[in-house]
Amino acid sequence: MKRYLAPLALAAAVALPSAAPAADYAIDSNGAHASIGFRIKHLGFSWLTGRFDRFTGTYSYDEKAPEASKVSVEIDTASINSNHAERDKHLRNSDFLDVDKFPKATFVSKKVEPAGEGKAKIIGDLTLRGVTREVAIDAEYVGGGADPWGGNRTGFSGTTSIVLADYGITFDLGPASKEVELTLDVEGVQQ
Image (cartoon, rainbow, N blue to C red):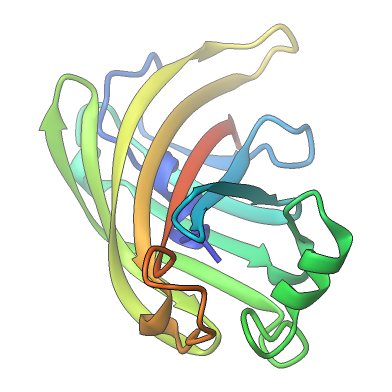
């Protein structure tokens, strides 16, 4: 649901100061150093939260030219996890993600706009349920440098929101539940 994709990529291309020169990074989702979370209002009373457990992605980042950064993320939509098996089964069916027909969601950046103070706006295309829409991720540089294993890493965090109906998700959840907020936390390993 939540703009996870864009999400995904999001963090990667932030325009903030990092210790490394221009480089390509793989998002460390296998090491559980990255996450794509979402939340949506439940009946207008509280927040229902969840995440996507499986996704991959890459990004390029140059602290001297953050506007040249690029991000690409692919999410396994069947990996949606709201910590409730029956609800997750419903979220996977045609009322929502329709994972049999659309097993992947993607985000591909088109441009990065530095916003000062280690912040940037990542603009790109989010494809979900076969529909592609432009989204903007508000991203922030978290940190970067050498890791204990002899590699180099950078980390970003970002947020965005999407309107479900924009992606063909029209199941009636009530008026307070039309948008999904996405939170992206990404750590990349330099390649």
